[in-house]
Image (tube, rainbow, N blue to C red; front, side, top):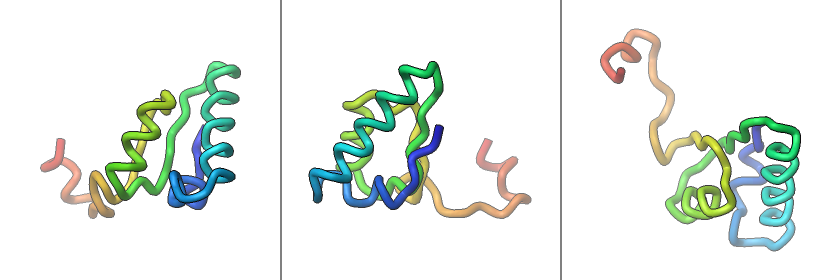
Length: 75
Protein backbone atom coordinates (compact mmCIF):
# COMPACT_ATOMS: atom_id res chain seq x y z
CA UNK A 1 0.00 0.00 0.00
CA UNK A 2 1.40 3.42 -0.92
CA UNK A 3 0.90 6.69 0.88
CA UNK A 4 0.70 9.54 -1.61
CA UNK A 5 3.15 12.40 -1.28
CA UNK A 6 0.27 14.84 -0.71
CA UNK A 7 -0.20 13.23 2.72
CA UNK A 8 3.54 12.86 3.42
CA UNK A 9 4.61 16.43 2.62
CA UNK A 10 2.76 18.13 5.49
CA UNK A 11 3.80 15.60 8.17
CA UNK A 12 4.31 17.54 11.38
CA UNK A 13 2.69 20.68 9.99
CA UNK A 14 -0.97 19.71 10.33
CA UNK A 15 -2.63 17.32 12.75
CA UNK A 16 -4.95 16.09 9.98
CA UNK A 17 -2.19 14.95 7.64
CA UNK A 18 -0.30 13.27 10.46
CA UNK A 19 -3.46 11.45 11.59
CA UNK A 20 -4.15 10.28 8.03
CA UNK A 21 -0.63 8.89 7.63
CA UNK A 22 -0.89 7.15 11.01
CA UNK A 23 -4.22 5.59 10.01
CA UNK A 24 -2.95 4.41 6.61
CA UNK A 25 0.09 2.70 8.16
CA UNK A 26 -2.08 1.07 10.82
CA UNK A 27 -4.66 -0.10 8.26
CA UNK A 28 -2.01 -1.46 5.91
CA UNK A 29 -0.38 -3.47 8.67
CA UNK A 30 -3.77 -4.74 9.91
CA UNK A 31 -4.36 -6.07 6.38
CA UNK A 32 -0.90 -7.67 6.29
CA UNK A 33 0.43 -5.26 3.67
CA UNK A 34 3.75 -3.48 3.36
CA UNK A 35 3.30 0.27 3.51
CA UNK A 36 5.40 2.61 1.35
CA UNK A 37 5.46 6.39 1.76
CA UNK A 38 6.12 8.40 -1.39
CA UNK A 39 7.59 11.87 -1.70
CA UNK A 40 9.82 11.87 1.38
CA UNK A 41 12.06 14.95 1.15
CA UNK A 42 13.13 15.76 4.71
CA UNK A 43 14.76 14.00 7.64
CA UNK A 44 11.80 15.03 9.77
CA UNK A 45 9.42 13.10 7.48
CA UNK A 46 11.76 10.10 7.36
CA UNK A 47 12.15 10.00 11.13
CA UNK A 48 8.41 10.23 11.75
CA UNK A 49 7.59 7.52 9.20
CA UNK A 50 10.20 5.27 10.76
CA UNK A 51 8.79 6.01 14.24
CA UNK A 52 5.27 4.92 13.24
CA UNK A 53 6.55 1.77 11.53
CA UNK A 54 6.20 2.62 7.84
CA UNK A 55 7.91 -0.23 6.00
CA UNK A 56 9.44 1.58 3.03
CA UNK A 57 10.05 5.19 2.10
CA UNK A 58 11.00 6.77 -1.18
CA UNK A 59 11.60 10.28 -2.40
CA UNK A 60 14.13 12.96 -3.23
CA UNK A 61 15.71 12.60 0.22
CA UNK A 62 17.36 9.48 -1.18
CA UNK A 63 17.57 10.09 -4.92
CA UNK A 64 15.99 11.97 -7.77
CA UNK A 65 14.89 10.26 -10.98
CA UNK A 66 17.60 8.03 -12.44
CA UNK A 67 17.91 7.24 -16.16
CA UNK A 68 17.70 3.50 -16.92
CA UNK A 69 21.32 3.30 -18.09
CA UNK A 70 22.56 4.55 -14.70
CA UNK A 71 20.72 2.00 -12.56
CA UNK A 72 23.39 -0.71 -12.88
CA UNK A 73 26.02 1.71 -11.58
CA UNK A 74 23.88 2.41 -8.51
CA UNK A 75 23.48 -1.26 -7.67
